[in-house]
Image (cartoon, rainbow over all chains, first blue to last red; front, side, top):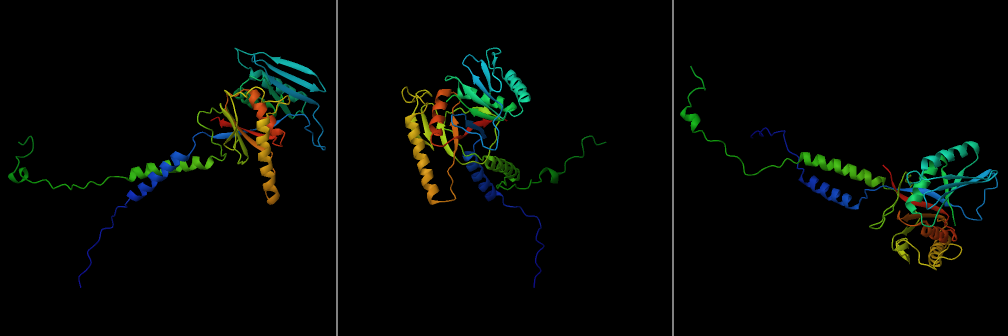
Length: 148
Length: 175
């Protein structure tokens, strides 16, 4: 009986079918995946008839922020105090830094202040409303859309 | 003295070079590595897309810092030419604007209100037959950033009168 020849331990893995699978998978994923990441901003609406839960006292003041077409921002405080603050535009754009600073001051003065109603002029674009909302949320996280 | 090596012998000069094989083995190990990295990256980005919102072509969503909670709700899309509910166009728009006379004194559009009512009735019907399904006040609003606030107001007011009061505004997340 003849002895078996000494077979080599070196062998090459056949990667071609794996590459084929990868190519199909990568193509499918590239075609079906979205490269923009969509997020969601919470927004309720401030409409007449909205009620406060019975176990929770209403805030001492209500604050509304209005984006006006001339890039002016008007902050109205009603309730325990009645005040109006006008924030004039800086270089023709909304001055959100001043808005945030003013809202922080109000938050310190009225700690029970939970949210803000955001209104905008009819012609103000939605994108600008979102930017306004984003800036308000830096100070007060609950933003309701108003003006209905 | 030998400067440039020894003289070439006859044997070295006429030695035949070994015959190279015509079959060429492509080195695909590195290619497999690249594909593996690509695949991992794509699978990861595929898995993180929790919010199932697909804006129509040409739509410019506003950009903001926002969260991506896993959410399935009624989708309302406001584009330049139409308002669509669950991808079904329900009202035409003229350059993002609602046609004059469409919106009543209460800010509600009759056409849109009817469409929302239909959706609400459908939800109620499902909720009656399946106790696990609850009536949902959530609406995902996918609107172009150039839309005037008047149109947004008309859509939100029309939804609100039928119990859709929890709005989630779809934005492109800022990096």
